[in-house]
Amino acid sequence: MTITVQEAVASSPWAGVARPDSATAWLERAAEVAGILAVDAVARDREQAVPTAEVQLLKDSGLTTLLGPVEHGGAGQTWELAYQVIREVASGDGSIGQLLGYHYLWAWAVRLVGTPDQIAAVEELYTTNNLFFGGAVNPRDQDLVITDAGDELVYNGRKSFSTGSKVSDLTVLEGTLEGTDQHVFAIVPSDQPGIVYHDDWDHLGQRLTESGGVTVTDVRVPWESAAGFVDKKQVVELAYGTLNLPTIQLIFANFYLGIAKGALKTATAYTRDNTRAWPYGGDDKQQARDEWYLLEGYGRLQSQIWAAEALADDAGFEISELLHAERESVTPEQRGHVAVRIAAVKQLATDASLEAGTKVFELTGARATSNAVGLDIFWRNARTHTLHDPVAYKRREVGAYALLGEVPEPSWYT
Image (cartoon, rainbow, N blue to C red):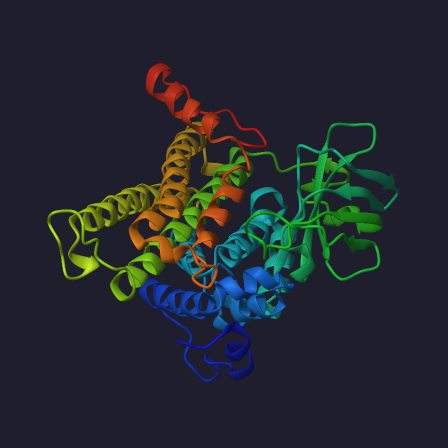
């Protein structure tokens, strides 16, 4: 499609169109969304307007309920497919690929740690109403304090990062229960007086993720809505519940790979249409597309991306099997194995996205540095989010597995 996001939202291109009924068809739908996002991705990035229309596009396409239960109108698809959808959407706009990935995680979070009643209620709520998730979760900063107020929990404090919350319908809050080291998660409406967004997300890349700070003041949550708690005690503590970190690390890797794919697609199109052959090399070509060094360069980038995608798909299948299994059946050993495999994917995806974001300039030529072309968006997006947590620690985790047979211990970042 060659229409912009605003035009797509106004015209509702999927109105009256049957919902995809297979993994292949859903990937085709994701590719349509990516094509729309790519049309004016650079302009929207520079404007840095709140991505309300972009989130509506995701909703209209049906992608937001991809993992939702069929009985509530969702597609009932698997995480294996969700990862590929994230990657495809990110190839059109890395910011929106990140928002979609985070939505999938937070929509699934209740399955990781919630009680059966909580799972049923949340999944019916978000799927039936096509609601979008954000998350005020940043475990490094224990700056959201929870007070026990009898039948309720009261959240107060500030989070320096709250990805997607301003454009969400529901926000996952995470804080520490006063006087303890107990983290408590709860899902609350995003639009309420007690949640104030700082509008201070002004970073190098991923500029449309609305990842700025948030102040939470006297947000009250019934104890019964505290994820995994019954009678004020945490009753759901399983190896399954620690899958949240490898799950989101693979989300990261897939939208990094989407960014790399977007860079490659944009650059090859520019080279075919605009790059001029170099006339002083002694092996002169009439067209840039025949230059051996351009063919070699694009061949290397494509090979890197294909290799990383293959490992990402393999790890995606492995963790999908666990995420869709009975919670009690998942073992710490299974969790550890998939975590180290995902650590390997994240390394390759980080390297591929950063390499693609810089190498495309060599392969397109000096005129491609024009702001009108906007090739810088890919490196800026990749460089910004790949700093989320040090990739060196992922290399170390894989090294410890290879040398010592050790798997990562569950933590807030492994």
